[in-house]
Length: 330
Image (cartoon, rainbow, N blue to C red):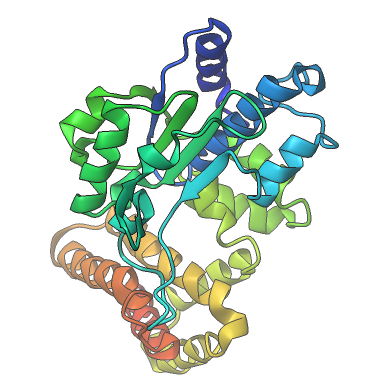
């Protein structure tokens, strides 16, 4: 939990006071550690309630041999639930929303709200944990069902609601939560997270990932296996290549995104190309600036929809590469 010491201290102080809040809204940008915090805090609470002697002194640290911690890590602890978007069995893709059926459990005899499922006592301690990752993804019906549980919280239950855009939540949900705010991390903290989570990264890749992370190490870790430094070097070369040779280089780069094995590299391209165009625009003026901004807007839109629409990686890659190549003509 690098860079989140204040949030850890605040949560632990509330719990150790004997009167913790039943719902915590973890608010902040994507990739800054909110989900990791929720899972670590959940483990700490469940271990503290059942085997406090195995807690370590540092933050949420738990003895790795602790059975309760192992069950939480495996997602099999009976008092630990994580609600997130499911895979649609028809399409094989992730659903757009967390469904009300995940908040309200249906049986032949009717609808049984989550709060009724929780009327039984926790199985292994005095506490039960529910993480919703992210609460932004709840359908309207799901938000209303959750609100019922927050209004009448089941005894011994702690909710962690992860939100990247808390301003869009129902005010009634926000008002029933205690908010912990998570800010972007300093580059040194991002570097430390990468060194811990991906120790085999070479220096060039890690430096590039720190730069594109923009304070969100989770964003950088998505590209840890992509060889991102080499890809950035190719794009930098393309941005200075004469137009007579640019098309061939753009095509060769686009072909390198073919196949499932090159998925991480392709996703890195979707991130790097718009970022490179944005950076270039900052140093331009007049008609050249206008053209670069137009290319950036088009690249941003294309990169943002490519995965959701299952667009062909080679076609998308070639389009983005051509926009990068146009930087050379200014």
